[in-house]
Amino acid sequence: MSIFRKAVAEAMSATSDEGATPTRRASMRGVRGLALAAATTLALTACSGGDGGGGDDAGSGDESGGTAIVTANGSEPENPLIPTNTNEVGGARIINSIFSGLVYYKADGTPVNDLAESIETEDSKTFTVKLKEGAKFSDGSPVTASSFVDAWNYGAYGPNAHKSSYYFALIEGYDEVSAEDSTVKELSGLKVIDDQTFTITLSQQAADFPLRLGYSAFYPLPEAAFEDMEAFGENPIGNGPYKLAGEGAWKHDQRIDLVANETYEGPREAKNDGLSFIFYASLDAAYTELQQGQLDVLDQIPDGALTTFEADLGERAVNKPAAIFQDFTIPENLPHFSGEEGRLRRAAISHTIDREKITEAIFQGTRTPAKDFTSPVVPGYSPDIPGNDVLDYDPEKAKELWAQADAISPWDGSFLLAYNSDGPHQAWVDAVTNSLRQTLGIQAEAKPYPTFSQFLDDRTARNVGGAFRSGWQADYPSAMNFLADIHVTGASGNDGDYSNPEFDALIAKAAATEDQDEQQAILKEAQEILFKDLPHVPLWYQNVSGGYSENVANVDFGWDSVPIYDQIEKK
Image (cartoon, rainbow, N blue to C red; front, side):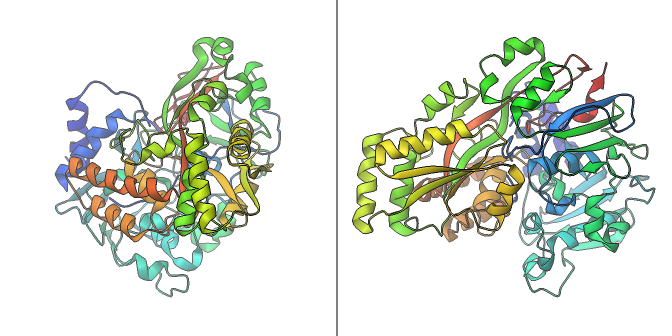
């Protein structure tokens, strides 16, 4: 038995209480340590949805030709569908449907080997991966060790500028390969032994590295992808339970149609004929179609229906904890938000927000005010981090701190808070900006973007010109995913360009620590730094609030708030 399987088996035998389950982007993380990590995931459920949105309205009928096609809401992917360049929710749900990796996560967050026969290590630094025999891509080509190694090298290579490059940062040789002008295209830490075996050597110990391997950045690619990667991204060839439903399956800004992949023989075999993801311009339109039976699954309820959806849908309503953390980011380069002045203003802004009132009045209890930077459903969560009183609603303290900042440099201009209007954000953004105007006496304005993809484009290009809503829907079930992948210098989710060497050093120390209690203590120390710097202003933890129609059965939502699409059955 591989240590990975052993860890999962030990974890499952250790407890029968699966608990509640816990999502933005990359991070850093021995036999004993892995077993503990797997054991703790039984209490999980999770990038954001963390960052969900939609596109143009589209009719939801069955266009993919199957007889049991499940329709679900989605959003236009930001980029062509390449695993290492897809780190937002709209693209991720498609990528995860058409690809499979070494590991996948069960509904409760438990990691299970998928294409990996075993993942073994003796030192938590060098891992030997053996693949199961017979796996194929949907074009019939075999999935080999090179399929993984070549895909990871391509994603890590700096000139390719892939969004999930940072996920390979722990692998030996990453610094050289990831440079923007690098001519080195292969990670020295990846070695193909034979068609079914490869090794991964890390630059430092990371006891929980196998836990991360279920994330989409670690998916394999067929040889055909490297002939023309951009064209491949428009019509990807995967190895998962679904594949694109032929030419024209992706109608940009409208929908994407998938059908069951007959070459897939893994543990996620589809119980339906396919999936159609509809890109709605608003959640209200999606909810209306759900009620009318024209949409089968919806993973986010619009604000206006939060008071009624459980009564509307009855037993088909879903409302349970997930690993979703919501905040807004104040970029480091904004005027008045650097140094001591910036720390004072960030704290003042945080104190103006009445999180209790907003979560009750706007979100009807489907959100819980934040107490840390992770999620209550992941190991390591603590409501008692020193410094988290900055999240308390305290208008007088806010005014005091703002005045101290003005003494350093008088405030001028307007505070902008950007968001995507195709998601449920306008109400809380209006509440926050109104509170800033009333409490601090400054001009504060919302900056809406019509679609999530447009919003992401400006965030990625650093063109927002103000603060912006952000959030995290966990990529893998660990507190490290919330802390390292968003806040470490250069991390893929670090859209505000935050950098603190002391924080980075603590994250690296935690990643190399096998003892889970010791690791959690280090992570608490790292969070103390975040509460002083407030690169992001924590808002609340989000339940997955959704539902499904009378036309489907066996609907479950996973630890990361995403429906388990392959298990849904059409009636």
